[in-house]
Picture 1: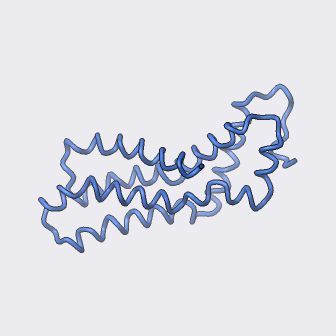
Picture 2: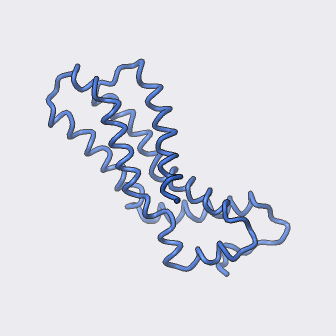
Length: 160
């Protein structure tokens, strides 16, 4: 059993969840490509649309929500493969499933980490994308809320 999975019997599921979150965040930030690649992809797609379609504000503002959504979904799909792959390669995924803790905690932690690493930076970068694509101000809050739900759903879907 991996040393980071060892803790006393008085520990709760929340303690185990905290250990998983801490471990996976440390691993993810050691490999910067896990969170930089989807973010850079998102920003490249967003910046190419005004170059391809022209700088007309009316055209860009009418297409902005769809462009931001498509770019966000494609960028989050770019990193879906990494949710369980590292744990599968090093054998810690087997340790998770043979431990006495419920496996939904593992899946929930992995999905949460994936969203924190890919979805949250994309959500933050969508503020810049809204400015670049002249998104109307009244569409901004609904787009952010829908991106919050959409990117988290893509992380859940990726765990399947």
